[in-house]
Amino acid sequence: MANHLSEEEQIEAFKRWWAEKGMQLAAVAAILVGGFFGWQGWENSQQEHAEQGSEIYMEIIDIVTDKKPDEPLSAGNQASINATADQLKADFSGSGYAHFAALMKAKLAVDNGDLELAATELEWVLNNDPADTTQTLVTLRLARVEAARGNVEEALQMIQGTDAGEMKSAYAEAKGDFYILLDDLESAFTAYQAALSSDQSQDSRVESILRLKLSQATPAVAPESKDDADGVEEPAGETE
Image (cartoon, rainbow, N blue to C red):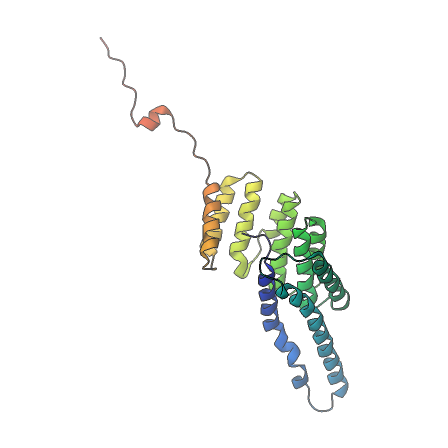
């Protein structure tokens, strides 16, 4: 399975965040009544600020959705995404827009082989009050980046004992991958079994990949002795 979500999956993740948080922003004007005009003005300015962040983030969405599904982003488009992400991080650091922009910037960094930049962007998200679901996703991505940088033990520690929620299968798969890198086939086998049992994607490709990984992690069976293999004992010598 891919270590990072595709652009389309990134957009879907943003939509889920908006479904959770967007209504709170849209309801600001309806909350206030009476003479709380100063408070209402402050709330309206907050809503306007959020709308500005949304408009800026949509520039990234437009760049991604305007290209063909299998077409790579041009260098110019990548530069535009990175610049927009930096603007959101600077001006809207506590917003989901900035978090998802940093995620996109991290993905581009991975695609370009710049794992250090990817780790920096993912750490930035974790340090700027992400939503719980975003934190779960970012932690997994950062763990995979660290594993790719050779910090496998650290990567494994990052996802141990985490309540991954809907990402339980993805977390278990990552554990299996890390155990493979550590040459611990028995633990990898157990992790891939957990990934299979908790997978709710109903995607046959996902299941096939997990089953392939499971087969590759099956611990080798110690070779049997010739006597055990034949299933018989050597006859005892005859006595005269």
